[in-house]
Image (tube, rainbow, N blue to C red; front, top):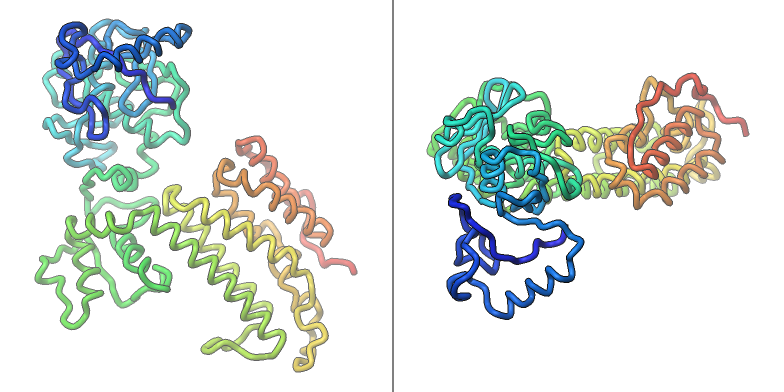
Length: 473
């Protein structure tokens, strides 16, 4: 969204806060009355001339301002709201909140809702389809939102909606937009993950059950393993900690084991955890994780090719037959699928690249891997499909066992997959030539269509389109 035009704004007696560092008017409060000495206003003569010229150039653009009498307000998030339908007091509150900045002392999940405490000490509770605040402004008129609720709703819309809402987003006097999902529904996707992104302190409730996402222990394991070659699922299985069983810093010390000590401290000490998270944000952890999975898949395939050529097994690997390799690749794809759910949209681009590249690789492996081998004789009862990775993973796919890679790609937003449409079409042409099962082909076609149209449609099961069959050569 383009930056708002700089222009003086009338205060109308409303309390305002200053903009954050990085803005030209940092040293001057917003809402300073127009007129008077330009030094007091924080505008130079040249700036005023630029504003007037900009206004002349934008005659057809509706004014966006912090004036409570204006119909459009550009919030700190850069979302432009239409407040024309609000009664005057609600409009005053909306403008004051949308153009202010408040710090968050903490946020947390509470029984059936969500709680936020701001630096000015008001506590906002969202739950039961509404919001309430402990400030005096809300208490005088609890039938309409206070400035704090308007501000918080704007922050949540900006952070939790996939795309910036178009200009002119309407607001109700309760502080929310009827054109967007209620913030309570948006927050159910994970307040803790949101708090990490926005660097809002999050207070956990030890006994609160988790329906999805990562526990504190999982996140610490994810952070520390990001500095190592191993995946978090495989990192130090001997380190088992529970945040609901508190330890003092002294109790976190493991003699002779700095890694275990750091793990315990990060699980039990919020300050240590936040410091580690700043050094290794959730997005970076996700990108590293999916990159490790991609490298693992490539290593498995390279080792399989070497085994087919020479019969040499990698150190510590007891077997590299096609069935074992196919199972190892299935585990990798399942790990991607699970982590797409857990990581709350972090790393989807890296996951998509890994999945699409693996799909293309397997689609091109419709061969008997041991054909012409000088060292391996066919095993009793074995046919060429038993040594064919494509056949093991795609050619014999069925809806009951799931569709290799496609089920995981279903969890990637169409907007992320859009750049991979040519690769997906290439994979489709290959598996059609190789006579993949009809349900697999249909699912891939539907996936490509969803990406091209930008949305996912609910579809009936594809089982009636046909089942898995042995290919006819």
